[in-house]
Image (cartoon, rainbow, N blue to C red; front, side, top):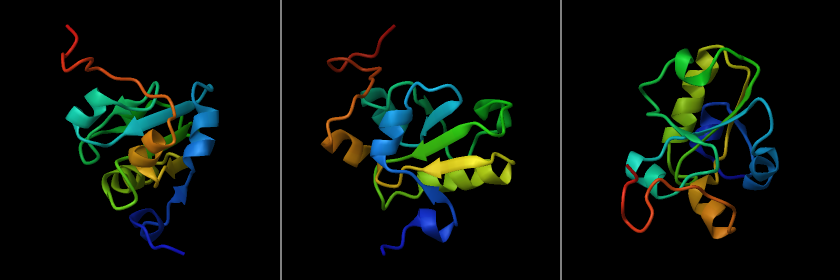
Length: 123
């Protein structure tokens, strides 16, 4: 078993396959903790970008039972687990980390959204 920041923090992991199945379901929230430039290039459909160290309950919503999945670039990235730990400490109950990260999501060819198309930022 590989030791990851997610496991060190005692957080639950979720696979990219499970996240893909849950996309768009009521009560599902995906949080991208990559850099803003990475988020603008590509992120999970419907994902929101949050700075892992600078957000509050108002950014996650009032439903403490919502399924919230945090992710960053890959299993070596600590931003997603750090942000997920903050959410759990705020009282959110269904907090998961997609430890495989965006790199595996992209490698599998799963759908993404982008704010930058052909290098241009939309107006």
